[in-house]
Image (cartoon, rainbow, N blue to C red; front, side, top):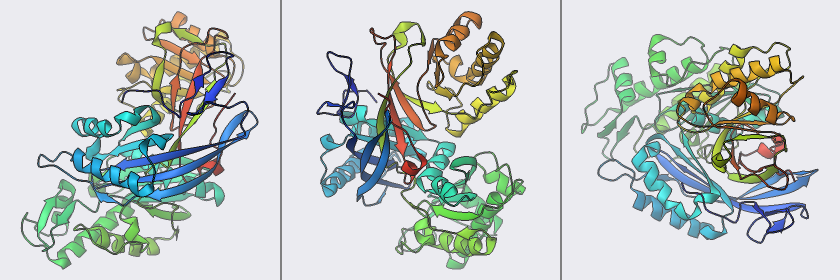
Length: 513
């Protein structure tokens, strides 16, 4: 999407060097509270929906934090429309979105910020381009994310409230998000996502018409039918007892993957990600996604798929499994991002930019790998591997776009330690650098310049290098980095943080002035 100047983007004042925010150019130096209107849009293979929210940001020392998130309007849930060529029908989708804005009583130009999340077939190039066109007028306000399996699992973990619950209850919380095509399993502890996987099990791997005839059969549906000895033929009716046998086996497979670090061969053949690393049972179990609405009795209407039957089978097995079954903060809307919280920080002056014309950069996703930077002898292989893991977690590992690495430097900045860290980062980011993207490093401590110089002068990286410091970021943030300020040598950074239910309680940060 093309970036445009928007009401939600922080701008420099013409004079005085102050930072201003919003369409009325309010000074952040003089306000203790900012109110934003946001929209989250989730467009997937099976369903599409929107959530409109009001965010209240309050000053805390020299930053702003999200203190309140109020849902203004939850849209209807639309079965994602398709054209005859099986691409998403952008015209029908656009009409639905326009109707939801009208129902919410909010004009598009009154939206300050938002997030557009594309999953499943919506990610395909022709679909994503058509969908982007629907939001072209607001492109600069939105974070746009094409979510693969790992990122969709991550979004569901935070959006369902599982991460927040793990802090609130000091518990190991597993969230199982069951959608139309896939099931995503996430394990959270202490507010962090510690393990995840995804499997080819969903409510719409088999679909029926109003007469009970088979109209859609995915490969995973065919596998389950064969496993239980059922023959499925497009256009022919399917016996209810055959469907019951299929969904019972589907539920068994979900729990085989969820509770077993080494699932059997058939379950492994259904995996879309690596299996969970540990077989330790969670303390608490929650469900999200479309099927969860049936699990918790919030939906009764059937939509020609396996949703109601699969939910009943899953709930029976969940109640016998052991962990305490709880209701999530969000069900079908878990991956709808409540808002993008625009925040602004200004970097330190000890930064490194080479060449200078790489600025500005916009909408760069942030990874925050867990790096042990306290040891005197830094472990290059371990640091590089943790960076690769963080990129894989957010479906960034193929290097198709620039990625910003957030790190927290510890200890002295000796040549030996800097060299080890820079070599590890270059190795971990090799897939990104190989495709010509710059090396983007963002730290809190006052050593960004040294690290950037070392990468360029000592490692002789051919890639552009941008290393800034004095900035606090979290994973799932997106950043815009503006041109260098002539008066200070610093750069303005706009941070777009995904705000989930309960995330304010986890202390998601905002503005540094």
